[in-house]
Length: 278
Ligand code: TA6
Image: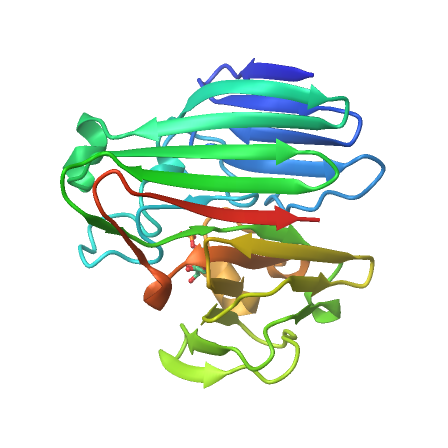
């Protein structure tokens, strides 16, 4: 079942229920903020104090960082780009079978985006909701000049407790430590005892989020970089829409084209950033 929900304040989302899973996607930012498999705990983390206000990114789920990841050279522009706070068009939903639903959302350049980023583009997000979650963010350069994008599916995962978590699959991968701006090399699994904010490069295999209660598998496509983030105690206190203990129950593993993995698209060229989460 696919339902288009409209709240009093203008906030709209698409709700999907099928025999394999349930999901909710806000039209603002084509922002998937709920995904749960039948009979299981939600896979995506959503802040208890998240905003559902127009113009403010939801804290949790899968914010779309596009057309830049992180800060722009122009510091007056929003971190992680504008796509996650723009109203997208819900193109349609396809109930492929009893266990599989596909939703498609679209964003194109308009008078607002061109003020921020001077290119013509078509951005499409396809979400497949089943016993696996598949996200495909497709950028088409509809301009007559090349443009460069950096981007991320900034996925917030729900965990039992951050102290119980290990991330496998990034051993021996180089990473930029965004806390020190130094280049490092990962040794073994990632565990969490402090703030972690790292951009891994040369990532080509499956990543495993190992938690006390389950393992979650992430396989990216169109990407060779992954961002791992937990704000820990101090940073959490400075983050919007996060309760002081929020860091304990979440970790971000972001399928990205970030830093050295940014992409240049020629006119009419297409790039798809994908992730399968199981
Ligand atoms: O992806 C990690 C990161 O860049 C962190 O540095 C932190 O800023 C996080 O994203 C959250 O950013 P946001 O703009 O959603 O508050």
